[in-house]
Length: 183
Image 1: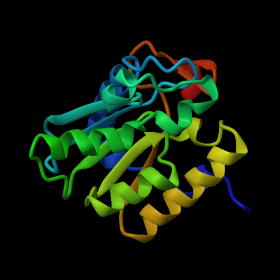
Image 2: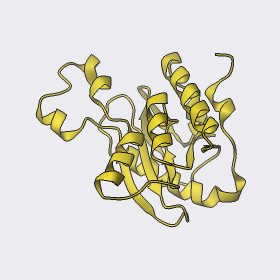
Image 3: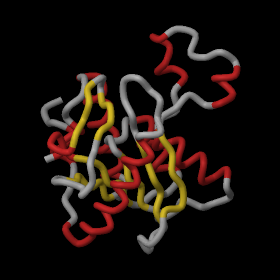
Image 4: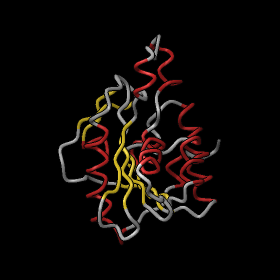
């Protein structure tokens, strides 16, 4: 791979105030994740941009938890639902159509989540530019392909740069992320 995943992101000055507000909401969702390594939050917003429809965060689904999963720490990734897919599943479970919605995520979508975003008609995805390249090579490769697939399918994939106007503290790749890490 020749490029960093963040090189595929676009900027969108036109919607900066909505993007900032809904990224705050995604951060609040991420804080609900009990994952000891990485907290990811996601929200879906109606096409008009006024109103969050659904929120979600990365978590092991309740039925898997009840069945005793993950059995070992190294199995966590096989059991955890990513925030992007979880928010889509929550919308569908509530009878909502996701076509044309905007998704706000605290981390860029991997290739698996990107396929769901494409298939369910999300038209715009906004994430933090600074976190896109700050992960392991495995995730960088997956995110690169995810962003490229979304972009090639006509989805606007926006990278937010700068502060979001709130105190920030969440886990990413085992490290504590604060507001200064996003600038």
